Length: 223
Image: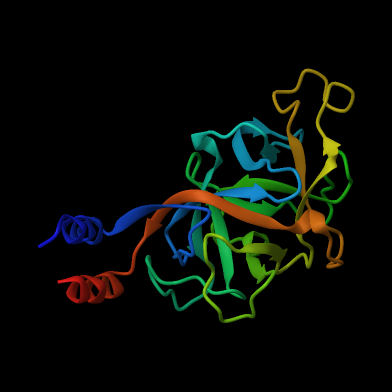
């Protein structure tokens, strides 16, 4: 058995692998990723910082950190299970690896600080309807596999708006004096479903959970 085959066997046996943004690697449920905003190149971020209403803040940070990583979770029954391929058009939930909370719209009556669109926060309620986002791939049709190199929009299924950030909406000492998020970009859900370049996101790198059956088939082919 060659060294390459031994390495393949090791990866499949532990059932996960690292991947990077340039690869045509299909994404799967249970994987962890960095969400990168295409226009600003900032990282989707949350930490133990709250808005004035007590909701855990979600922003977009220029500085990468382990707090920027997110689990890709299913939102609909029946569940496909960890390692199942994510398809363009799927509805997902986005869970922080740092706090285990889910990204959601805070509600139609709660406006974001700068742009006055819908506020985005992280909450514990995994079944909240405002935490569901449909993946709209930029260059693919619904039903095609989502890959690490794909760009996409995230449409909140309940609030009917896109997850958005913008260079115009930067937290600084004029709009958030001495805040720990000074230098971050605001993240909000748009008031309507009108599309913009500011709605486009991409992945950077992360940890891929592989499908046990597919991994077994690949291993047999290698051997």
